[in-house]
Length: 461
Image (spheres, rainbow, N blue to C red):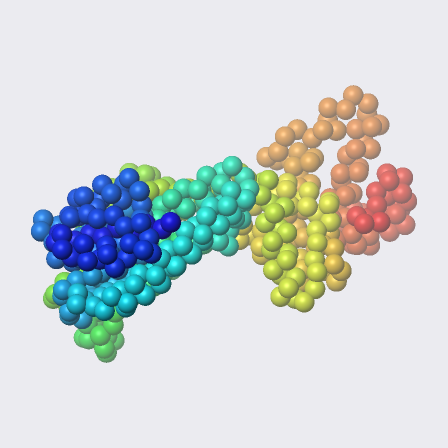
């Protein structure tokens, strides 16, 4: 049976609400915000009926505490205050509904029943999301490696709170997708998610973008404009590549976090903003602090919770799964099926992917476009992918010692060298024998004879 918690300092009000609702659910009571916290810690209810005006601590303060600490149950405000302002404040703080005392009993029961249904659906959704995380899926992100599962599990937990989050990781690892999914799973999901790329904005524009400006604040400011913090009010602002933000703007962001207020450029009064801040960077912020480019006090405010996205080269076991998902998406867009040949998959696995998941997707998109067949082979991959694989197989300037150098028999070492030499040349020219022969200084027929002698065949033959 579902549980309802009634929070009101008046015993008579609690009694009336209990009598109205106890047939629909198990009903518990709390006469203050402090006792409500204790009750919620023991057994989280499915619905909270909350009075706004209470001694010591009011209902809005308790409501904010609930949301900041990840309690997502719907809250129905039951108050004697019949004003649009109080209702708006309650909804902004995360209330699901608002009813004024003196209500009709049947209306109360109907609203409570709807919110209990919503709560049951939300619990089921959260259960399904946890199951998907265990299977290696977090929204649009996938990964069954231990590193990615740790990220998903931490993100799932932090999404339930209102904590500030700092996401670290190389470019292309999916920091923006993680930020979006945390917002989508939070109590702020119905409110705006506003992203700002701090690295892409010129220094003279970033403050106006973040905080807005008044008319006439600078040359060209023809009208008042709201900044990203105001636009994100009630929701989440994502400060991407915050490590590239200049120190002056860093100070203003710090002040906005601490005071929950901002000032537009050219303005003279503070504007209250209720935003959750998620930031991300590919930079080492400790090094940036030592170099004097980043404020240490801002770092402390940003990293209440830190999530680190692993590079693709650190979770190669996820690559086939990612490749399959990308090919399915790209194939549907192109109106065709696509799959990767085994030798091409080996080349993908050998590549270090400095551009991470973004690079993998771009490579596969190019391959789908270039391939005339359903199967993607090595020849559809860009040179840096398959040549990188060949270089690691045979050694190279930065690789391990080539295997054929450890071969005791000269003739066998020579044969192994020739195989790798010609394979690499052929792959570079997409298995065009004429171009390969020209580069190697051989006649076309001589190269064909050599390939037959060495047993070299084009992949798929």
